[in-house]
Image (cartoon, rainbow, N blue to C red; front, side, top):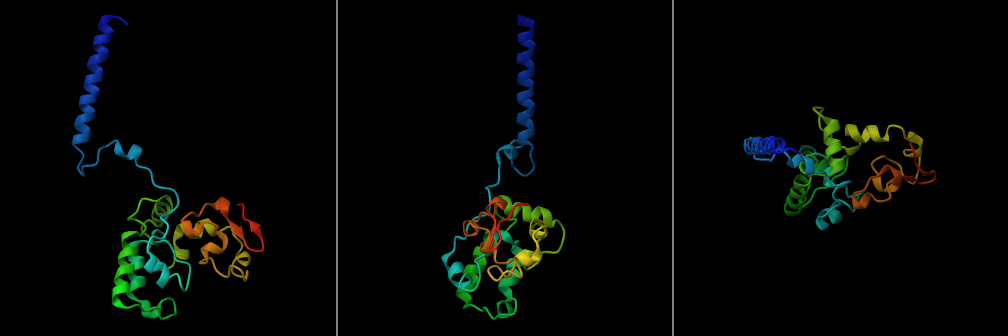
Length: 189
């Protein structure tokens, strides 16, 4: 490379770095512009991390990971435990607050996990349901599974029994390649 070309390359490099530095420092929310390149959501969803939640809620049903529903949904659920989908699931106030705080702090839209992000992105501006099975992404992902394999299957009974078919659901992993429907076998769409 000729000295003149080296000088032009050096000037262009300095100009580019200076411009990038200004652009980064001018970000309104304080987030560096390049950070999104490196921010990646963790796979799956955060496994349940509250023993109190597992004891109280998991004693009646699968302890759903908080990241499967957004905070407003969890807030409504926890605010109406006297009629929890037809059952009285009232807790003493201390336990209720502890569990509610855990659910709200780890809800979809507040954590950076792949499944939580997909649930929220698919829901868009639609109303937020109280049932995970009514989340738009959930409905889409399960739409090809014949209802008789689930609802008429005594080993599954409902799409809300996640761990009946998702072998690693308790660890927060809902990979479609790990689906085994009792009495049917591996599901492959």
